[in-house]
Length: 390
Image (tube, rainbow, N blue to C red; front, side, top):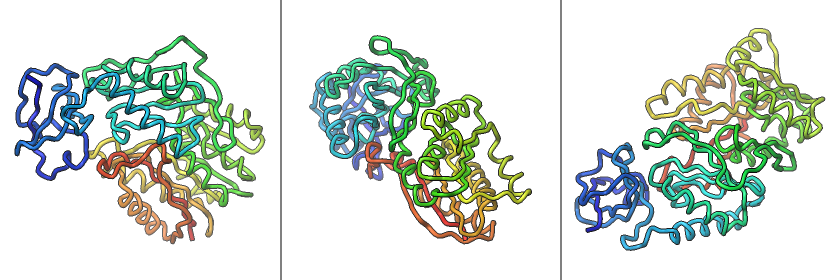
C-alpha cells in the first residue's frame, strides 16, 4: 500500500500550486510513512493533489514535489528538475554566478543552490530534501559541469526538521574564499564563513539601478555588509562613500573589497550601530546626497511583523532627516513577511512623520534567477525603492 495523506484545503491553496501542507491541515495519514518518505496527497473530497515528502516532526508536514501521483521520485526526477532550472537560468541570466535552484519556485522545496564561478553551494533545509542531497550534487555536476561543491546547512531552520546544522565539502576540498565579478566589480565570496551561501546574489540589479543617483554624490551606505551598495556607488562615480555595519568582520570584508577594486581612497567603512549613528547625524545636522538602507530581515515571522515595521519605519525616518531637499533614499527589505504594500505604506508613514514628500525613481525586486512564483507569495521577498526626498 502506498502511503497517503488526506488534507483539508478549503481555499484550494495547495491545489492551486502552493507546496506547503501544514500539520493542522492533515486529516489523517494512511499507511506508515517514515520521516522523509514520499506520500501521495488527497484532499478530504478525495481529489488527488500530488506527491510530496513527509515529516511528522515538522510544522510543514508535507512539501509537494509533483502533481503527478505516479511520477517516480528518484534520481531521474531530481535530474529533470535541475535540467529545467538550469535551462531557465541560461535563458534569463548570466550563469557565471547565479542562483541555480530557488527552492519552491523551481519545484524543489527547501533546496537552494548558488553558483559562484566554478563552485556551487548547496542548502537542503528540510529532512525530505536532505535525503536527496547527494543526488542533487550529482545532477548539478552533470548539468552545469561544476565540480566544486560545498554545503551550507549550518542554519537554525534545519533544527525544526530534526536535522543537525552542518557545513563542509561535498566534493574534493578547494579554497573557499575567492573573487567573482558582479556588474564589472570584483567581490570576494567566502562560501565557508560568509552569510547564507557565502554571498548575496539577489541585489545585483538593484545595485546597478543606483548609477544615475550616485554620480558625484556623497553616499552613506547603512548595513553595508561586505560593501555591495558602497562598492557600486564608487564604481558609478560617487565622490565619497561611507559604509556602516555593526559587524567588525563585515567591515573588514567591505574594506578588502574596496581595495580589490581600487576604490579605497573614496570608500571608508566603520563599525557602528546604524540606528544610533543616524540619530546622532540627525541631531548634528549631517547630510548626505544619498542614503542607502539595506538592513537584515527584521521580520523573521508573521508574529514579528508589527515590531519589525516600527523598526523599518524608524530607520527610514532617521535616514530622511539626513538628506537635503532633492536627495535620494535607497531603501530595501529582504523580509518575505514585509509585503510590498506594507513596505510602501511604512515608507510613506515615515515620510509623513519626517514632513517630507517622496518621488519614486525606481522599484525593484529580486533578479530572474530568484523567480517569483505567483502561487507562492513567500517567494517574493526582496523590495528596493529609490526615492527622491523633497
